[in-house]
Length: 81
Length: 218
Image (cartoon, rainbow over all chains, first blue to last red; front, side, top):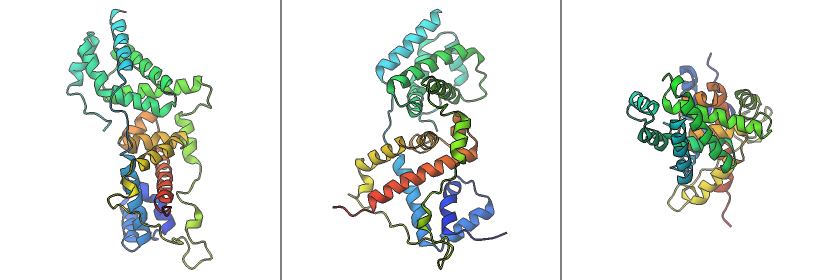
């Protein structure tokens, strides 16, 4: 069974494609469509770019010192109890 | 990949912890504490409540230490404790049982296309389901908006406004960089539902970037 993906379907399976969750046949259909559709190429590029940009959103790298202190104090309490 | 390198020998570490070794405990807190705190912050919006969740999680972990059998990595085990306590807190705050795997599965089961149907040609048009017009390319040249702090802020704000399931999954997958198995394990979600939530969240962030990046500068 080999119906080709439409652009609308491409947009819905892009996450499965990027996660390697398409079966061999689906992956071939995806790549076949991609090889001849500029619009879907742009969309895939933009999803990749979205993921890359999201990965650069800053996040806290270490515990706030006061919280760390409290956690260690809890440990001492636990040790005695 | 949960943010930090795995500690070299979990068996030795566990033995040291059980014997009350404070250095071993501090090593554990320094290795995974920040990831646990970020996870708590993803669940609950108040930073005071997130702090409480993390403290309770450590107490729970110490109490459960003897029952930890090493079937999952220590890190995953700790994060699951955080997730469970965060859920309990959310329930206590009388929200509608958010974050339960049932609720997240329900969110995933609602139909929601990645893009508005108007972006594609209808059944009576020359090429049904093809783009009406292609997405406009984004400039990635030096100095473009894609590289700016403002873009990051826009993404962070967009994620904060997403429905619970989408917010959790995109935060863990794309901000924290966890893989899909880790997210499923900590959130108790199926691979499929996890991917559906991620898919929608990414589509929404892309849509916000699209309108930001393709609007003519004034």
